[in-house]
Structures are given as structure tokens and as C-alpha cells.
Amino acid sequence: MPTLVLGIFGHRSDAVLAIEELKKNGIKAKHISAVTKQKNTLEIISKDAAIGDVETGQGNNGLYGTARGLGVGLDMVADSAVAAGPAARKLAGADLETDGLAVSLIGMGIPQDDAEAYAEHADLEHIIVIVLLPEEELREKVQAIFTKHEVIPLK
Image 1 (spheres, rainbow, N blue to C red):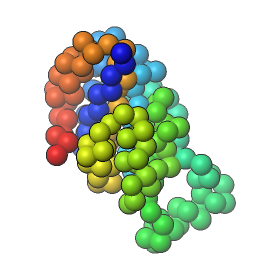
Image 2: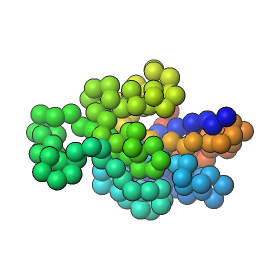
Image 3: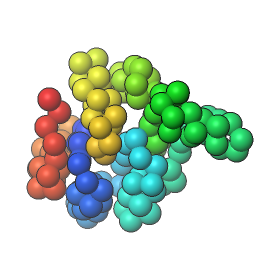
Image 4: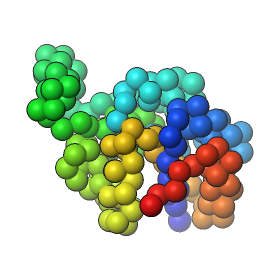
């Protein structure tokens, strides 16, 4: 049965190094996603770790996206998550100041309390790396790799 393992990183280099080591240990890029508040940060991670294009959610391009970006900058509109990898369509564009990202994570099978804590970390501009494992047996290996690369505790 597929299993999700999530890790929180405070710096993009830690996230990239963790993702690279995951891939060296047999975890395919198509099973690795990342989400954060900072689009530029995630674009660098996506490029360096080759996990897929960054998605910003519906309507974040063109005139509406420009207006929304100005609104976020002026604290008139809530920040939203940007994501890369297979979970990007589900997570990109989720509001960080409301429960949007938490609800999306709950929809992926993350318990509510944990999902809310992950959303708080994303709002703090931390990077959340999400790994979909085909087998539960790989969980310990992924967690060890995350720990090696300065994973931040959830709570």
C-alpha cells in the first residue's frame, strides 16, 4: 500500500540534497513533490533536483495573477502555496492564511493536526518535501535521509 512521508526543510539546499539522495537510493522523481510559499525558491529546487515544473494554481498567470501578486504584496490577499512534482496540481494555489493547504494535505491522507502544522511551516517559508512510497518498508530509509539533511521537526 502506498505511503506518504513528509519532511520540512528550512533551506533550499537541504531540500535539494535530500531529494538528490532519495533519487540515488531508488526513489523516482515522479514520486517526489515539494511545496512552499516562495515561488523563486521552489523554481530553484525544481530545476536543481529535477522534480517537475512549478505550479502556482489556477489563475495565477496573466493579468489576474499580476493583480493577485500585488494584492499579496499589499497584504490584501492571502499568500498561496506553490508546488512541484506529482502533488503540484492538488497543492498549488492553496491559501496559506486560511485552511486551504491543510485541507489539501488532509485530502492526501495526512491527519488534520499534522496537516495544519505542515501548513504553518509552509507559511513560514519552509519547504515541505513529500514522498509517495510504493512500500511501507522504505519509510525508515526516507526518514533517515531527511534527518541527515537537517529536517525540521513537525511540531
